[in-house]
Length: 113
Length: 113
Image (cartoon, rainbow over all chains, first blue to last red; front, side, top):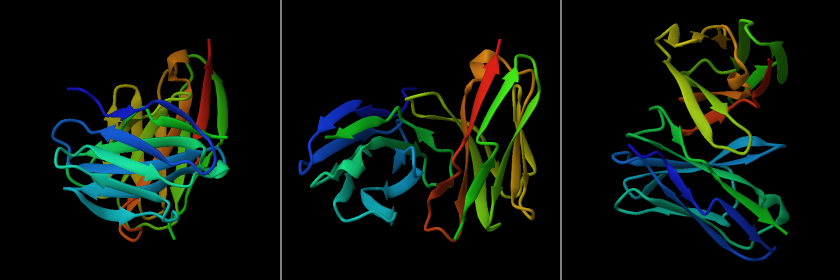
């Protein structure tokens, strides 16, 4: 069974631009969560989607948004990029809820110049 | 507010040693606790998930224990190998944290040949 895939793997953007990251969960998984990982803050939860609905949201500004499609694939968007948005963005999928085992993708490394 | 702490932050051991990684959490109202492994620049690999009603889980050379009342978990690695070198993260899924995993900062393990 294929694992969680994320595209693109690397991105370089400049301040003020916007970016869209994509996550394809493991087949049959309906929950997708997004995390931001930085050296200073570690792993921080962004949001979780289940059946195309945002179920939970972390403490990030409104510039961070996401959505989930009917095939469970998810995208997250960051608008008006800031230098501090440089991070590894990880998505995780699980069968139904966040209480199930979380399977993580390889991440998208975003660099904002 | 749930906080997860991992000690030590870094650990270097010779090959073949048995070792213990520690994880503590402040709020005992958890659904489960997961241990992950992260190789440099990569995503997270789930190692073990312990439900709140369980005391331990084992997988190969890995054994994780959970003492919910004292807010502690340990990950025991037997007969360590250089391939075990990675950062090990523990994360709890709390009742009171809006349905998300709360991560510790990780223990960076180096196993020397």
